[in-house]
Length: 460
Picture 1 (tube, rainbow, N blue to C red):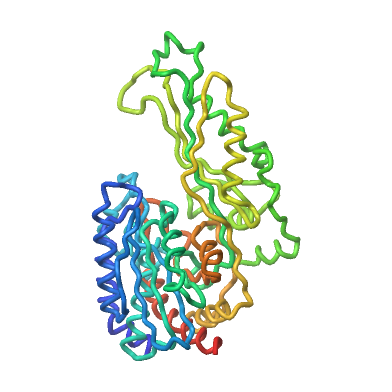
Picture 2 (tube, rainbow, N blue to C red):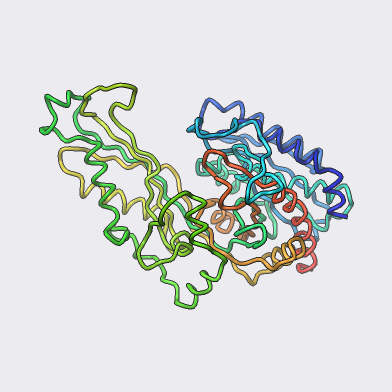
């Protein structure tokens, strides 16, 4: 019945997703404020059409949150579906093969059935919209086995600051038994997996100031500190010859996994040569003594996301700049705290900066790391659902990414989350040419109802 419904409505499911993907809902850009509202209204309209009740666009101090629910029996379990409709910026535009907000289906080696190329296709519009269509299917076929609530936000890509406030103010309305999230990835289409851990995040902007104005590099060069040079030296000092992070106290709260735990993590299918080929690199890089899977799953990181200062226009302008800036993300692991890591970085940079410059570190946003149990009713229900749909048991994995709100769900609502994502790491999330497999989109719609059925039966 599930596959028949999907096949009968396949083109409509794709057409609706394309409509959603055409809305340039970039949360970090104030120029897209009206697009954010348009996108939220679109989600509201589709939730109502699918059969949800009490659907509303809830205003916040930032971008709105879409809430809806279907309570068929208060005595039955309730699944809270979380997702986000905001997307990353699309720069650099010249690296996109097709316009980022004009979804296009193209076949690839990994997606022979075709992949949907568009910003937000995998992160997270394509993935959260699977839940809307799966819900519609359960409503239309009278097979919804339990209650469901939807909370789709518009600020995940900028730290979910206002979602936290919304949760605190709506604890009773959001009362549920589990949170279902599809904003992660699988190992491969023929190797399904479920994430059981997420790294946390500390995201900062660093400003280094030298002279009060840009100076002539001939007149003052060699006598006045260049903020770009100083910033580059400070950043370079963060990694030693083994690519170990040198910030004092950075590893104090990191728990070292046992040899057995590391061996289990490395059982996940992974081919280093394919990994390098896919990224067009000659070799990998990272902390000495750890595998690629360990570097991206269980070890903390320090990454430079952007750096600028001085003159970068066409032609030449020989200046010694007054300021230099950098955006830095630090992925953190269980027991590390994002505010503490930010404070350690701030103290370190202030301590190593010469007196010839001033340093300011601005805390932009962050979130805590999360580990989810593999013996919970929800995880087992998800694993059985994937086995039914894919014909294979899923592999438990740890994701290198961060979803800051997951820790808040546990802290404020007392709820564990199930991270049942259907994208692939190779789908170019946050990059030009982001895409999402048609197979993955439709397979997600097929799998989700199995989870609802399994979870309801196991919760009785």
